[in-house]
Length: 264
Image (cartoon, rainbow, N blue to C red; front, top):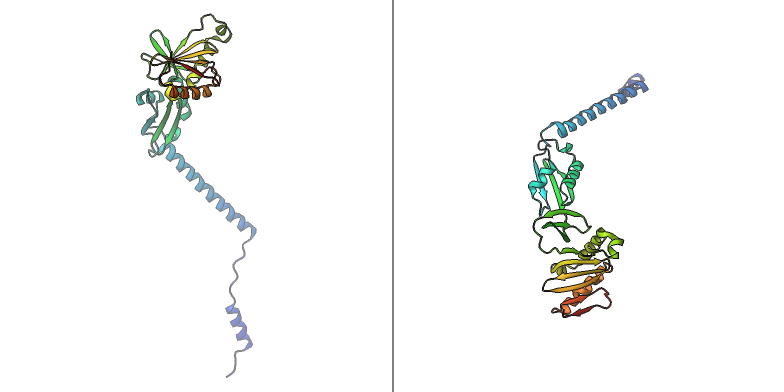
């Protein structure tokens, strides 16, 4: 039987050869890239519009509740009234910085405050109140002074465990040189250096001059402190003296390297 002819073999070879893809020119490639860029831009614009609508236009992320923590003397209602959180407003639009500034300005008892968004529907007010270290009596009331010397509140009753400041410089050279505000700062520093156990039994901090500060304790006891210098060292020495002589009436730590204790 005769084999396939040359023409037949050529035709078969052409039939087995895969077809080449159509040629894409530079112009077609530019059009494809342009179309892709347009589609990408449209998708990004739609996504941006959707996100903006979710944040500002929808009811999904709006302020529905306020949570206040850290209050002690202040009430939650007082803080939230000043904060004036806009209930129902988009959560993203709440000006937390302005709210913090308003709280610090109108409620001086607040030492610091953080206003935070609690997604999806809350605003959190994290309050830190000032702690009084001294009281200044004025007109039958008491001015609370914090550890920086800032007079932040006037109250009708003296808080327990906070000593009263008794400033008695008269017309001394110390008063003329330093002024009452500086002497107040010295007393504040001494009060801040007192260990917790001593501060709790201190009734008053007496200041007669810059370097003549003393303490009046419960049970008719007293402490000669001297100046505010070396406060932490004096505090440790005083604690040790009071433990070693629990019946002592007067303690002198003005020179902490040579402390003294006596019966009265």
